Length: 573
Image (cartoon, rainbow, N blue to C red; front, side):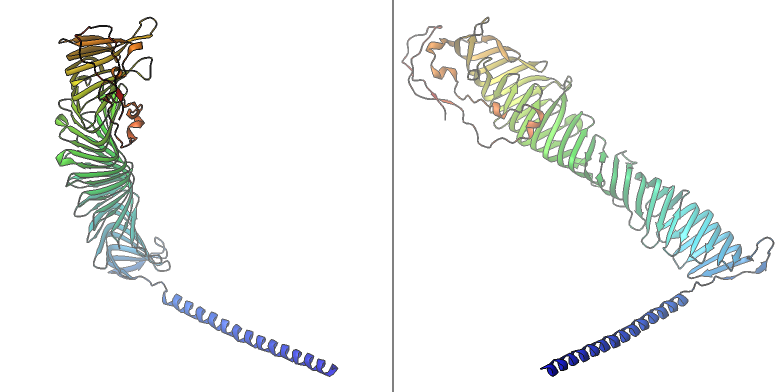
């Protein structure tokens, strides 16, 4: 048993030795391999370094001499001097060549050519062959197939193919002339980056900025920071702080603090697109269009302007704002359409229309406003709230005085109805109805009202001292005229014979309190400007109609001949 255990221990020990031997051999091989890889990379790097050894300048001249006293370390070159270095050829009248520094100073009528495309002239040039940098000054002119650059001092970085200056330059191409104090020009992609006092001028436009990128081959301009583009023909202007402008097609797109100043309008928005040749502009988000002639503003989140047709289309929280007697009137709808020249401008507002003014509110499906005549027409289930009165009809016309900008008159056609809540009761309403109504405003307050055709009225009579409700009067006449003060009826005039009844409260028939067709729509009234953007329920309220339940009449005044008893009732549908 002991021999077996000793044998197992010996075998394990031998296995461990073999494993260690294999690991050492593997490490030895790997170490040598890593060394070989290292030396291989070192050889390649050294070869590349030698292969990329800086090339010396090649030169020739009619006279070559040295003057260590005046020009220590330099070779003086005179007459038809020519220098060649890795793709450029420089000629001049005289030069100093510093061989040790690989540096060349060219003097007089300096001409540099790079390939077949780039030519530069100047009075002086310093060329450092080690870093391939040329500094030229004195009447510098550089040309390539797309542009001509002139400046006083120009740096030419041949490695990055970049030109840059800091003492003003002018670049001219087939379309534009660009000027700036500082700038870089990238030869490969024809990109010009200009900063500080930048202008881009062509026969139609003048652009001013402090930072832009301009591509001489395409005419594309990218603007950064405050920039203004002025149309030299009609004086229209564009302002932005970031955007794009195609100088060849006159198409632009601006995305920060964009403003378009047209002859009769100013357009603002988060994003603004403008095609000058088509006279078309569109704007997105936080839009404001100011009519500079009519003192009229439209707002929304998407707009299109057709300059040649004098039209504006605006949606997405669209609202029109006009100034009436130093007070603002807000009209909101799903869609706003403004057409015509300022003196003949027409504003159409479609669907879910609401109006808010401090002393006048309204609602309908569509509105048509003619600013030349001052006439506003409301269609499809219109309602107006003026002071304490609610006015409804099949259509409502409001007339403003175009000179004073104050409300002048009111016309309600077909099923005209005016309602005002009783001063001390939430359940009682003074009512006037008829075929048509005609009202007059004084200082934007409804003062007189003429009801023509099938006129009826119900009003509640309170004691002047105690304010206690005493009687209710119902009148029927062909035509009735009312005067009002702060929305309260003051006088009543019957233009033809009337049929009037006054009822005490104890003997009041229910059907007398409510005229046929009555609807109280206070829940739809915008109480503040922000309410005009609230969409009401599409469920339409049904007017109250007379029913047929029987009640006894109790008459205090206006005794009439006996008639067959009626069957009045109050029935809501």
